[in-house]
Image 1 (cartoon, helix red, strand yellow):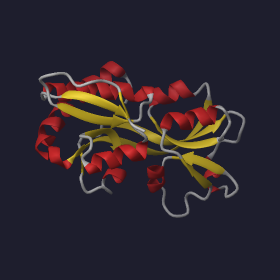
Image 2 (cartoon, one colour):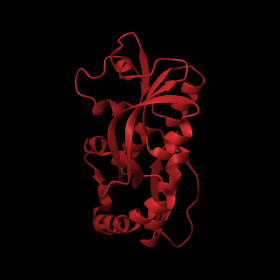
Image 3 (spheres, one colour):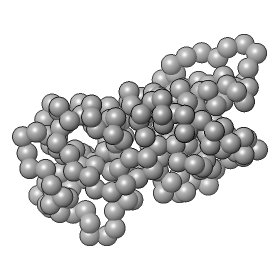
Image 4 (cartoon, helix red, strand yellow):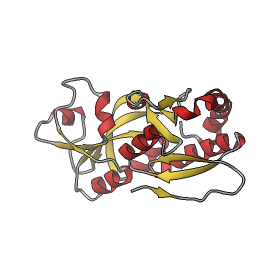
Length: 212
């Protein structure tokens, strides 16, 4: 199910952006709202399951997604990756405090790890042998991990997110990743202006919000 969090105001064309709804994404959403407002749009954020969001974007039902892995976006014909990277972080193995937490977990064929489907594309053949439990709602993954319904999860994090999680979970860094803002190709004519805005605003965003 997809939920809108706000309504369109009169006089400005709307620009629908899907995102996961996790609290750590909110600063990036505010940044993109500022970008599109300066381009003359009213941003309508939509909290959407991960897989559903990219499908809606590819179908043209929405205008953009807050950020995606480049490897995921490149699988969709109608999705354009916006440079530069919006967020830099890493893929992490999150573990409940009561269990072993190291990279051997990835190789344990008797174990189970919750993950978004797109994160599996980041692994080479043979790197991941555990049973994967696919879930596309980020907030639900963390809730299930905290309640011990699962003990392990693959999750993309930045430093701010990680600091907020350390009291609840252990973690192991797996690899560096970057998230890119993505738009539907019907907005290709806006690409140079969006990229210019991000190039100007990201350095200030880094200083002011301390989340990259």
